[in-house]
Length: 338
Ligand code: MN3
Image (cartoon, rainbow, N blue to C red; front, side):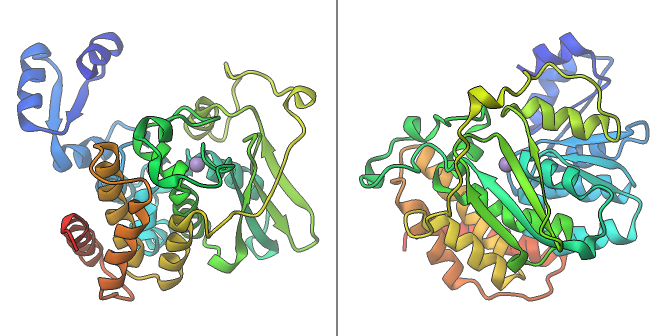
């Protein structure tokens, strides 16, 4: 598929995961520069001629191109949330001291970013992150019998497999709280989650005077991607106009932490800080993969994560090496049968 896309769009540089795939691409495209693996991602993210870098790889591996791009002073359109989850404090420091910047692609964070433009950070009361609740929000029992194909049917958004399962367990919303805290430098206790099944309101910011700003549109990821790439311009898009009469009524409710233990685990990892979010994320990645392969039940995902989190010896102000070591340890631990 990548070869087809490269032939169609004609990029000068292409990166794949494995060395052997790079070799076969080199035979197909002798005039292109072909890279592979983590070093390839880093090179691609810091090309001198790139004026913006869109990072949309899945999982903790996103940290490598993100750090490379920020070191090179790039504007990053960031669709990968795991990098901010595992190393939020370090990325925050890079943003505060370096030339690089992040324009979020995650729809909730794109909304928050837009609400915060022109506002004094000190005037923010709270960030309100909305979530559809995923395909099982109304379900009362039988979570153990949920199959991968059921979990992969998201009611509103078209996304990749890993994030769609994360939406079904509500881990995605937990990761997004950690992501927002790092990206906007807002403490955990000022971030709230609201379940909003229609996915029309993408998130909100409440200010000190109790004014609430929100961003609304039909749910379509193309809009958030375009916004991040075109920022600060706002060109026309192919996304449908929002018909509020047809879309309504819009519902909001508090999330159910008991029915969705992954959400509670994410919040407790965020509160613990240090390497705990990296451990949460890595064990979640392994558990979701095992669920998608039919090796474990849907309800075993939080059991694995909480077991690995309990064993973690937390490092409070971790370096990038500490974070990567915690990530690698948690991956091993998550695959060890208890
Ligand atoms: Mn999102």
